Length: 87
Image (cartoon, rainbow, N blue to C red; front, top):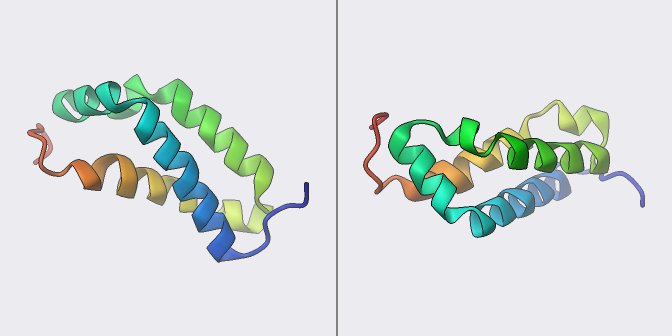
């Protein structure tokens, strides 16, 4: 499979991976936001997604942090209504 070479496709892949994390880990995400431990609770899943993303996109696109941005947008921003120590 060829590497993804466009920013749009790289963003789309990052968001798809983050959406899957969100879909399959709702309880951990809620707990992690409420306890300010999200990245510790999902460390394994996040790193698995990061490895998949890194293997699918060109190195120049990987360095643009689209994956990390997608994690924040999908896992955190969408749950801004939850009570948290952070806000």
